[in-house]
Each structure stands twice: as structure tokens, then as C-alpha cells.
Amino acid sequence: MRFLPTLRLPLSTLAASLLVTLPTAHAGNFLSQAGLSYSTYVPLGQTLTELAPGADPHVLQLAAQALACAQPDAERLAVIDFSRPSVEPRLWVFDLAQERLMFEELVSHGRGSGDAEATVFSNTPESYQSSLGLFRTMNSYYGRNGYSLRLEGLEPGVNDLAYQRAIVIHGADYVSEAFIRQTGRLGRSHGCPAVRQEVTYPLIDSIKEDHYLFAYYPDPEWLENSAFLSCEREATQLAMY
Image 1: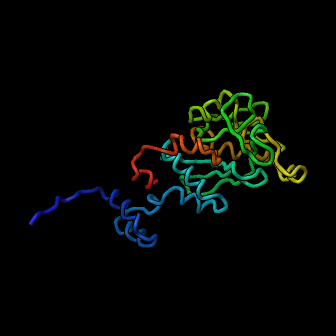
Image 2: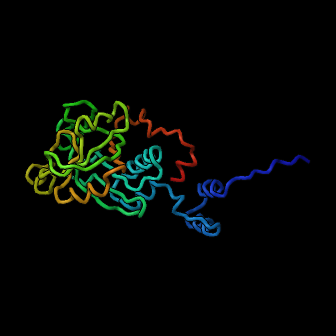
Image 3: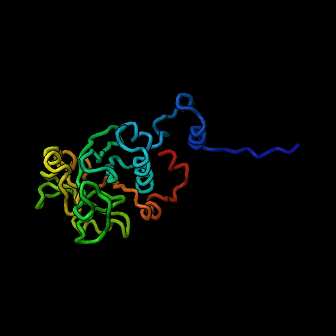
């Protein structure tokens, strides 16, 4: 008789692999009996979807994947879905540590990106276009648009000129329901993701200094080539976050 070698796996690895096949209730019971937290193993994309049911689950899953590549321990994440028209809420800010939705907001796109809907994006100075991809938030400051938040683009050739282009989060009077009623769309920026003036301070303060922003549009080239969407981390790490 031939004996197979015994595999000694860490409990955390075993738990993660079993969760793939266990229904939610059984998975929770298994982890509870093992002395582990179920929330640790719930994929981040699923958590974001539960917190923001009005958002596109596919977009939130991509945002979760990008964040897992960049910084699995991040505490805050903002997501913009530029595939939605500007008259709809398309910015969500999540507190990942507390697992709560902090903001669901209107947000503008650049005048070079489109009219009521954004369709064109770039990293080009003076294009007045919005940029896609993953950003890290920097410091807040007071500029010509009032209280603002600098962004560091993390994707070469996609958004890495955001700082030089002065692509920042700021408040604007053309981001409002009143403006939509007058024109049928939001006003447009020079490429910045502008928000309602009423939420400028609390929103910026919630994500300033080393948090993350993910801006999405179904651009085939970006989706195929983004380093953060084809991460080389082990599959178990991605599944666990």
C-alpha cells in the first residue's frame, strides 16, 4: 500500500480555500468554530457591494482588486464610475476599517471628456480630460478652487501626470441638483473630479493623506493593461481581501 504525504497547511490558508465551496452560513459557522472572523475572508468587492447597493458590482470588484494590489491594508477608498451620466451619483467613499459607506455623491468630469457623459480620458496636460485608474490621495490645501485635495496618479501613462496637471478634488457650484435642472447635466471641470460645495470639507478630510481613489470607465486598453487589474499577488491574497 502506498501512503500519500501529509500536507500541513496554515489554518488561515485552509479556511480561505474552504470558503470557496461553503455556503455563507456554513462558512461563518466553520470560521467561528475555528476561532476566526468571517469578515476577514469576505472578499472586499462583496463588502463594497453590500455597502453601496446602488453601485455597479463589477466596478466595485475592480476597485477592490486594484486596492488589493496597491495596499491591502488601506482604511479608506473612494470609487468613481465614469460610465454613469453626470446627473447620477457616481462617487462613493468607503470606510474600510469600519465597513461603512461615508458618501454617495455627484461628481464632475472634465470638459474635454464629454458633455453629459464622459467618454474620452487621458493623461495629457491641457486636455481638460479626466483620467482613469488608481490614485493615492495627498495633502489638502487652499487654492483657486477653495479647499482641495491633491492626487498622485499611480498608473504610468494613464494618470501619473495628475499632480503636474493639478487634477485635484475640489468643490464647485456647478455640481448641484440646481445646475442639473437648469442644464440637464453637471458642469464640467478642467479634468478634476469636482464635488458639491456642501460636502467639500468632510469628503476631502475623510480621504486625505494616503488613502485611495479608483476611477473607472470601460476603456478596453486600460482594462487590459492596468498593472493594478492584473496583479501578481497570490490568488489566495486577492480572494481573502
